[in-house]
Structures are given as structure tokens and as C-alpha cells.
Image (cartoon, rainbow, N blue to C red; front, side):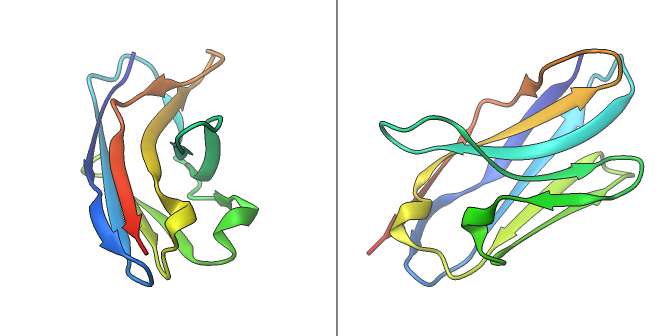
Amino acid sequence: QVHLVESGGGLVQTGGSLRLSCAASELTDTLYSMNWFRQAPGKEREFVAGIVWSEGTTTYASHLHGRGTISRDAVKMTIILHVDSLKPDDTAVYYCAASVGGRKGYYWGQGTQVTVSS
């Protein structure tokens, strides 16, 4: 079990930046990875970025085009997502997701809205 709480997001202008954080708590299993997904209106949820907790290895979706960085704070059990040069297409609800050892699938946060104005 993992409880996830996201923060950050809101309204951002085109060309601006966003910073999202996700804190994990109430862990009853070993954390394997923490990730960000997003879901735009009328579209399926898609992967944004992820980090393997023990190694710090990161993975990014191609749609970021090098604009994003994911990092972790192991003491605070938190991940941070920075995305620069935001575009209206980045408008979506951003979800934090965690995977744990020995269990398929993800635990999900409640999501945080990011709106990029044109």
C-alpha cells in the first residue's frame, strides 16, 4: 500500500514552467518506482516521466522533447517534476503513480490540474 499526494499545478502561460511534487506515505511494501502520467480531456492517460527509486534511473516520454526533469528526495519520499517551455497541449490532469515490489500495476494519487493558456 502507498498513499500519494500531489501538489503544484494550476494555470500557466505558454512558454512558462511547471513544478509538480508528489509525496508518498503509508508504505507497507518496498517502493520500486514513482512516475507521472497525464490525461488531457478526451484522451487516454499517458506516461510522462518515471524514476526507479533505488537506482535513480529516469525515463521520459518522447512528447516532452527534452523539456522535463524528474528527481527524487529519498528522505522526504517525494518526487519532483519540472517541465519547461509549456504548450497548450500540455494541459491535462497530472497523476502521480507508484509501483511496489511484487505487485503489478500502480497506486495512484488524486491528480492535479495543469492548464496552459495560449
